[in-house]
Structures are given as C-alpha cells and as structure tokens.
Image (cartoon, rainbow, N blue to C red):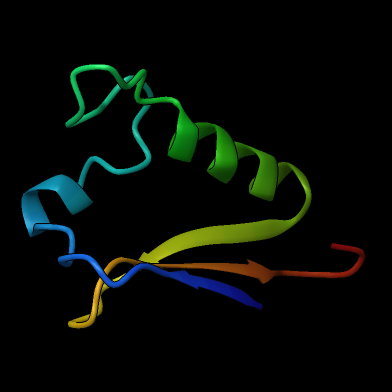
Length: 69
C-alpha cells in the first residue's frame, strides 16, 4: 500500500463525489484527467486508487488487490 497525503485542506464532500470522473476539474487550467487516468492505470494493474477522507489533508491510497501488482 502507498499513501499520498498533502497537508492542505481536505477535499469537500461535493468534490469528492466527482474526483475520478473524466474531465472534472476545479482548476481553470486543468484537464480533469489526472485522477481518472491514475485510477484506470491502477485498475488495469489489479490495484485500487481511493480517496480517504482525512482531517489533516487530502489522502490518496494505492493498494494492490492481487499479485502481481
């Protein structure tokens, strides 16, 4: 398992529900493809990428489902 945590503010519940949708972004210059592609690559390699609700900031967890990962 790999966890990536930033110490910025947590992601709001309304944004959380759209995090992995293609072309969803809150940044005017973003494409909204980064998390979508990351999740698709994880799943193609039998892993899972999830957002974990965390009071200390945004936390993403990449975990293997089955070997090899």
